[in-house]
Length: 276
Image (cartoon, rainbow, N blue to C red):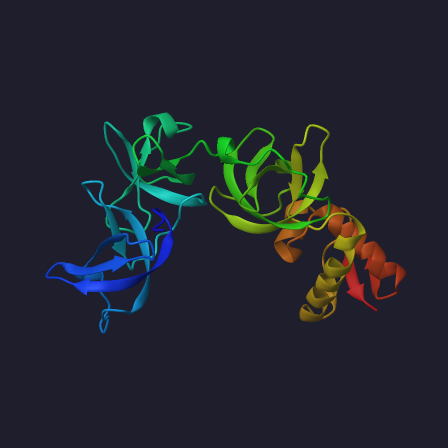
């Protein structure tokens, strides 16, 4: 079966003046235009291609790899806005449409948005939506506190940054727990901090609890060794100064310093910390 909006492995059936016709085991075929035909392709060869529709809504193959595939989330830039909607650059010659009804807010040329690519069953066309929340799975029973996960930032709110967890679930990263620049479209590792009674999920960029201390204690030791055994950081240092030096929160810094002090690996001075 040929799947629209995804990579397919098809077989070269016949060569024509306009390109190769490719087919599957079910007898379906479509065109791979000459400009995408790789050198040396011969009848009977298998080839991986992406399937989408041309300007006349006919399925067509390409050897180009898009930045997003069907049923996936990805950040993409707007290249034009018309009376039918916004068009995104997704790495193919034909831009990807986001109809006005699928825009969480009016899109602007040059701006990036996280979108979900799906097949519109009514029109048979591939379209994108920036209303990503409705495509996320509300059943978070597969998540557990402390899990390491992949995060994709998709929306700024008053509380923090809404993120997509493992390309499937919705999570929230609170502003007061962010100690690095986070922009819409950023992918980053994170951790499940809390799963609330209403199944809302709080996430963190740092491993929660004691598990976070050991690797960060080692990071402090490495930084001390790289700075002649001294860092001008204390419990009273500005949180931003701590992050710029060690890329960790002040709370994590204090825990890690406490661990190192108890292990007698550092001295705590009025002007900073030093190796023993």
